[in-house]
Length: 259
Figure 1 (cartoon, rainbow, N blue to C red):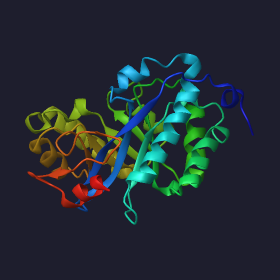
Figure 2 (cartoon, rainbow, N blue to C red):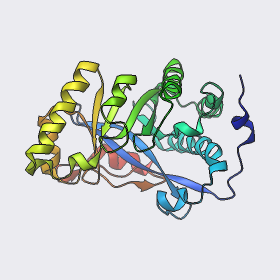
Figure 3 (cartoon, rainbow, N blue to C red):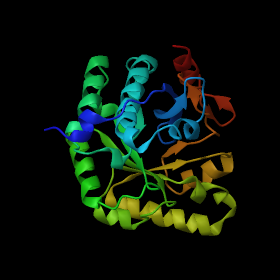
Figure 4 (cartoon, one colour):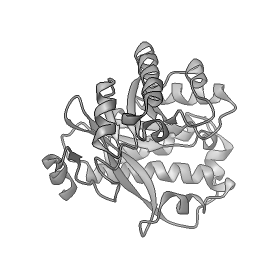
């Protein structure tokens, strides 16, 4: 099956690359995976890159980001390690889910990167009026063994109502609910509610935007297992950064970033 958008996406006319930020598994005491974050070729931030993307280029950009992330990860991830690669995607840039996965599947096959190690996340900040279309995307992705995730949960358009229409494999709790949670009973109560809902729906939780040890410890005690944020490591351009747990960089992460 084909779709018009899959064959007529406007060429970008600019180049870009990726930075990688680790996701830490507090239960296992190891790196769980890395999120690929778009950057300019000289390390420019995501906003500067995204500002160059016209509406006609959304499909092409979305497809090229997936391929770039997989190609880089296949070179950077150490052989034999069970690591997830998290890739952002734009639901509005997916016309026909099966057809729009072709480039992703070909890149994974070419680089021998397992599809079971790829997580696709979409942001709740991007309003999706057609929830049936989004449900079809997630259903199709799961057929190929991909993990699905909602990014920025708690800060966007849908909120808890989003979980009524479909249940992703993973939810990333937005940093607005995380910041200063150790000193905020209100944030603690909201996050505790999300933890309970996620447990009932069999959804894994990830707390993003961790900047202090206090935030990490409160969230860990609340039952959250996966973490991401500057306290562990800042994104590294085209490499895997050392990961800090406590006050000491993780030794294994140092070895990986040197490979």
